[in-house]
Length: 141
Image (cartoon, rainbow, N blue to C red; front, side):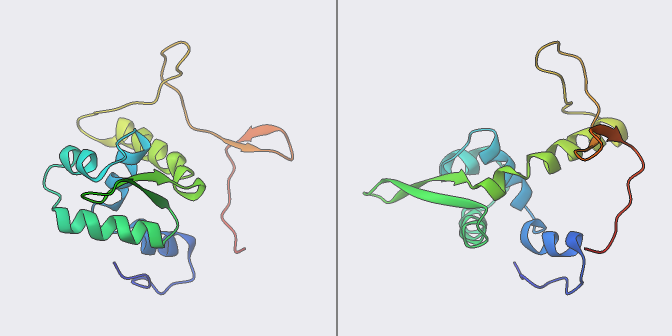
């Protein structure tokens, strides 16, 4: 979990320095869907070792994406909660789900409108123009 694995002046590279390690996004996703204890997360992610989960949770807390709260003193056990920064990754997960729906040979999930049950598209909205846009351009900040 090197914080500077990618030494590039790029938002994508710098974000991957934080969340790009193996299992990290899946751990965050488990918390996002309500699995908040070590054992709940471990049980859901078959193949993830306890040591690696412990390391990732510590790193995510150091990175400010999660916080922990002690819920049992003997033995010490913690509940994990996403911070505002961690919760903001929901759009990343939705984009991955959307991409998978359209590009994976087998689809496991899809995004739907909760009220009517139909699939939705992802769009970009310009708050200045008050309109959805499709002519995006990435520029230097």
